[in-house]
Every structure is written in structure tokens, then in C-alpha cells.
Length: 495
Image (tube, rainbow, N blue to C red; front, side, top):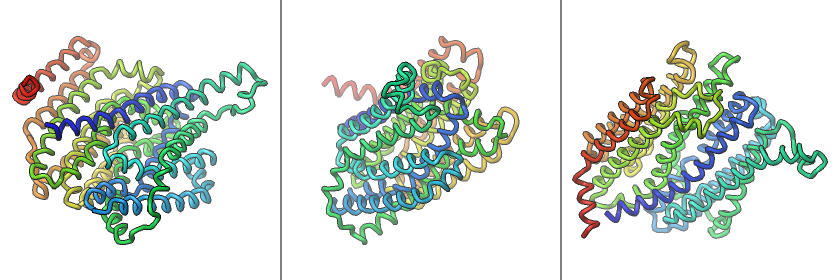
């Protein structure tokens, strides 16, 4: 059990590093939807950030996962650190020069101001430069330092957002001749948001920059080649993931009629954020599980360990998914109090379970990572991206209940569901893992069924007595199914 306790401890700390910042970011969603003049401005912000996700993936080009693989398999760990750090450094510097040279072209293509593009370029570069230092903290099992830096980044970002969007304009208005009025720029809300992100990214880089002075600035060409061969399929998978996760917002803006496109993108993007609780759980888990997979791959009972971990991930994930959907209408009041955005609430269950499916896929993907068949992972991700693109192009233009942003939500859950199923099917013979399929499937189906009943049946959706009752029925089902395991754990603690 100490093995699972250690994993749980690391996941909890990584969870703190992700959950607390993301919880703070909820305030940003509420702030942006209240401060930005209309949904179209929020749509513009979302669109630019969506494009940035693609470049984040490109600038790390799979080296993060490759770092873990080779850090655990190579004897000379310093060489792994140096080779990956130097590679990221020079590629980021090259991107910076080229992107700044063509920033006017990029701004014209994105239909945004050049200064927003300039901010975005610097943010992307600074974030890329800390990929390996953060990975080294995870590989060396230093979650507390990792958490402290991540939380510090978001606290700075949050504080600057409140200063730029609330305190600065209020101070400028109250004292037109004061210092704040002299530095305040009107109608620059989106620019201030990017500026806050830039300063917080710079702060994180400053904290982690000593890592660049500790390495031997000599790259190992042979090691770099092997890391790239391992990591490039991860890059393809990352681009496919970015398509699955963010391209729907871009396509909505392109495929919907111009008179409603930005308004629909704004509402969809805001309600999409309510699925963030599952994203938090999945992300925290992924941060802890990836180093765990590689460090325990040589253990004789590794397959059984992975099977057990997957089952309990599904148990916790099913409960979290159902809880979020049961209380979705309360969460929207707390986190998204601007009623003009609530029109897209019907996508929340689909987005929650889409992220849950992605978390299950993360578990199931262990087989191709441990067997060095990351190309298979790239192919699976490409299938998901193809499903995303095809269904978005097919459904978004439709009129009726399955068109528009609901079509995008359907495409998202279909993409992650297909990736989950395909990874399980392909991994059965390549790296057999004795999953408890009956119970895993049972928890998943019951949570989906109960969620649909509690959200899509109007009478039940308005009756929290019934919905909380459904939640307790699900908890009892978990207890009944896992009773023997729970009793064994209790008996051990009482000895």
C-alpha cells in the first residue's frame, strides 16, 4: 500500500499545484465575463489563447515526455538534462526571432492588434524555457517546490489581472491627474490580460533560470537524436490534442454566421470552463502518474499496479463527474454570474465526461509509452483529431439541437471516447494489463446514466433533494462494489 500512498501523496501535491491555481483562475473567468464589454471580446481572447495552445505544443515538441523516459533509463542523468535543456533553449530562441519578424503578418491573419501578438510570442517563449526545469522537479519527486512555483505564477497573474482591470481604471477615474491616470490605457482590457500573463511567465522563468547555469552546455547528438525519435510522435499527439481541446472554438468562429459567431463562441467558451473540475482532477493525476509509470515499469507486478490505479481513477472520476453535473446550476451562479453566458449550459455534461474519457485514455496509454511505441499514440491522437474536425464541420452548421456549439461538444466527447476505446483495444496484446473491466465499465455507465437523468430531465434538474439522493445512491454502489477492499484497509489501520 505504501506504493499507492506515495502516488496519492504526489498526486495530491501536484493537485494542489493545479487545483488552487485553477480555482483562482475561476475568478478570472468571472472577472473577464464581467469586465470585457461583451461576449465578442471574450471570444477574441479565447480564440487567441486557443492558437497559443498549438504553439505551446510545438515549442516543447514532445521533449517533456521524452525527458522522463530517458531520465529514468539513462545512467548519465546530467547529460539528459543538458541535452533537453539546450535543445529547448535554441529552438525557443529561433522561434522568438522568426515570430517577431513576422508578427505583423500573424496579427493580420488573426485579425488582432500587433501588440497582442508580441505579448503572446514572449509568453510562449518564456513558458517553453521552463518546460525542462519543471520536468526535472517532477522527475526528482520535488512536488512541493513544483507546487510553490506554479501557485506563485497564478497568484501574480491573478493579482495583476485585478490591478489592471479593476484597480487601475478606478484609480485613474477617481484621480485624473494622478500617476495611475497617466499610465492607464482605455479600451485595452485584452492587452492588459496578456500583459499580466507575460509578467507572471517572466517571474516563473526568473525563479527557474538558475537551472540554465548549472548544466554543462554541451549537447549529446546521439542522445538528442534518440530523444527526438521518441518525442516527435508525442508532438504529433500533442497537436492532435490541441485540435481536440481548442480547435472547436476556432471553427465555431469560422463556420457560424458572422452575426452570431463571436457571441456563440463567447458563451460556449465560458460554459466550457464549468467542466474545469474534471480537468483539475485529470491534470493533477496526469502530473503524478507519468513519472510513476516510468519509474515502476521494471517491477514484476507493474501491470497489476496499473490496473488497480486505473480502477480507482475511474471510481474517483465518476463521482467527481456526477457531482459537478448535479451541482452545475449552482456552480454557474458562483463562477459565471453573467446570465448572458448561460445559454450554453447544456454542453457542460458532455464537456465533463469528455475530460473524464481523456483521463481514462491517459491511464490506458501506458502501454505504448513503456514499449517505446509512441507512434501508436500519435496515430490514436490523429484519429481523435479527425473525429473532432469531421464532426465539427458536419454539426456546427446544422440548425436545431445538435448544431452550433452543442455540435462542438458532441465532437469533443466523441473524439476522446474514440481515443479511449482505441487505446484499450490496441494495448490488449501489446502490453496486457488485467483491468477490472466489469467494475470499471459499471462505474462509468452508471455515472453517465445518473448524470443524464439529473441534468436533462427538467423536473429532476430543479429538485436538489432528488439529485443529492442520486449522488448518495451512486456512493452506496461504490461502497457495495468495493466493500471487501475497504474493509481490508480499515483492518490494517486498526492493527
